[in-house]
Image 1: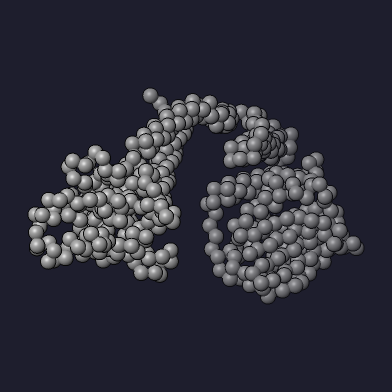
Image 2: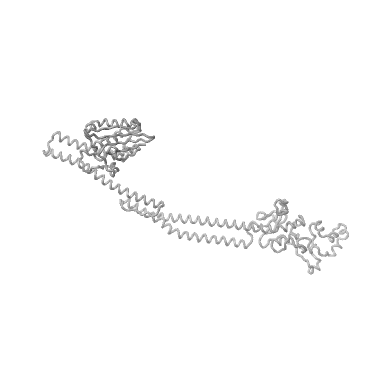
Length: 536
């Protein structure tokens, strides 16, 4: 199957849309996970920060002795984390149940406790301290004795302050267990296997971070999504992201089909225009309605079509002019020979001289055509070297001295006559010779009213300017640009004796261009024509 530019463009659009949508999908998913994880962490940190007053109060009341799972204060802290316990700082006069000062810790002892201990109990003072000061007993024994917070078996159901054993910081409804590390970084409550997912918050003696460090309170799974409702919400968001990505991909695919056709339509129009040019139809043109690259290409094709049309007309005119230029001397030469053969024209030196002039004119025309063709192909050879322009102009005047004297011309060379320029002296001599022939043919000059020729050379920095001027008659301003066209003559009906082939100035143009220069024509201050040549 042949892949057209439309198919390729459609494939590129689909590929780009797919990559873009997938990138947006994964970026949104990653951003959501990060944001939701940050939300979970902030929520967990807020819950831990809310426990700080209770933790500081426990440290102030019990020191480090309350930090173990079976202590009622730790049970109170876990309940407060779940939102089921009272505040750690109770109102004045209200009973507190968060430590061993609670009524549960001050319940009646079983008689068997004292009788079984006997005198040893009295001697070590523990029994007396328990009856006199329960708080002192806590500070001495640190951990309560088993069953110290329970009433006798017969009185369990009737005890007004019965309390269950504190839990071991089990996971709350929001996810995560409460754990603790001391100020040295040693974990005293909680599992060591969940350290990576535990969110830790330092506990200072006051709200100031510069106050003494008491420890670190943590929440297991505080850095990850552990609650089932949060997990369900996150999973649903991911599914929605996937559904949106699939819908966007399908919509972009459907829009890419007409969009590719819209983009390819101008290219197809350009292709048809190029095919017309290849068949030789230079009349068709495009109507560009945009300023983008395709619009500029359409305008360039219109310019190319117009240029090819003008070249075709110039070529047809060129062939017609050459045919005419060759046919005229050949017809004259043939007529004179036939007259001599038939005896109508005498074969004398005058007739032979006329034939020789026609042959010379025909030879000159053929030579000019050959030189122009070689110039067009770039086959003309140039041998560049440094030469004095003034000497080359003086040499041209010397070569035409007889003709200038017979016609009564006055000529002069002005400006920087000693200027040097890198050029081919043979081609530059031919250039000045063609300009001299053009002046001798078309400039009015008589002995009592001599014509004028003035050549000015100016050299400024890296540019050299040569101006060739002659006297009247001049050339109409609208014809100045056509003087350098091939086979162009100002007077189409003039006789061939006074006129040339119309190729002299065209040959001058090719020589100047070969020397990296430009040539133009303007009206002369002497009343005739001024040819301006600039070389760089």
